[in-house]
Length: 459
Image 1 (cartoon, one colour):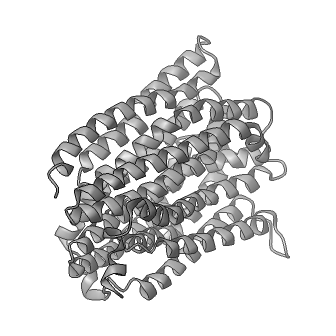
Image 2 (cartoon, helix red, strand yellow):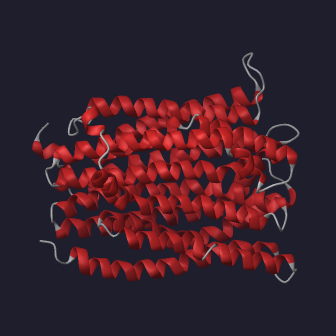
Image 3 (cartoon, helix red, strand yellow):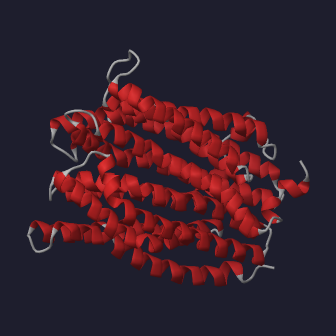
């Protein structure tokens, strides 16, 4: 491999590089949303108890997102540290980072395996007293946790491919898993081709099989094309300094993703006090909007290695270009998402077989919350920039603000006013507009500080 090809993140025009790396990552992240959307679409149309099954998936969803949070957060730290090490010409360190990331993935999987075996019932029961919903949610979540090796290991190998600029391969792996999931969902849920009707359990098995397929594809691609990184057991030997370096960058990303789980769990508990229709409507809206937010996450994952690599090269111009184009492209994505959801709010609700109050609540949620997307896009882009510039604290604070501090207390207040009949039910959706708007102002202030400390001093 030529030096020029190897270091294209330091030589290619930044705007074109952002697109060539970002588009595959965007597709990859949006396909992650496919797992939850497809499951929900088929489950909600089950005869007799489709809406209860959809509610069960909503209760299980926070833990599934927490798995993604730890896997992706560890991967983001790995991605940035590998990219920066390669930018500095230190291939030995890059290889050690990759090996330690694989070691960490094993620990993460064992943790969720244990939770899947002993902890799911207590968790689900804390959100609902409906016996039918609890049983379906426990079954679904147990399967997803016990067989979580696919999503955990894929999160690492995906980021290792992206760190060297080979995001197309991670996208192919993601597509392979998504296709398998889509094919297996109706077969296992409804019982086709002689197989038994498995209902919610079938949705869980389709999901984990798809995730394992993605992992195996990414593993093969990694060993085949990532020639910049050396492999072997000696690189997997745990290093406190390497692990600290991974999580110094990745921990804010873990918190950012994990707070989505905490926020969803807390909102389930708050909204159920109004009625279960609000929980179902919010759960479905949340999965629909993942297509938009995950697209922004995908571009963020292109911003991070590009800015990090050029920061390692000490190139102020390329760092600034990475920030500029990353922000512009992210805002374009969010504007397109806002327009699409405003136009197609009602058809989206109908796809999932919703009717009556639940459908109305979901449509209103889509139309109100999507107004906040431009603020959310700026926050997501800033978080990727902060991570790339070793400003994890700023990224962490923005995450806490937009996904907890300005969400849960505000939602609790709105819910209390709704229950007291002071406000109509739809006002609870204004929570997200408030949270993203205030957080965007905080992000802008932080960016000015980071620019002064970390960018203006570069060559």
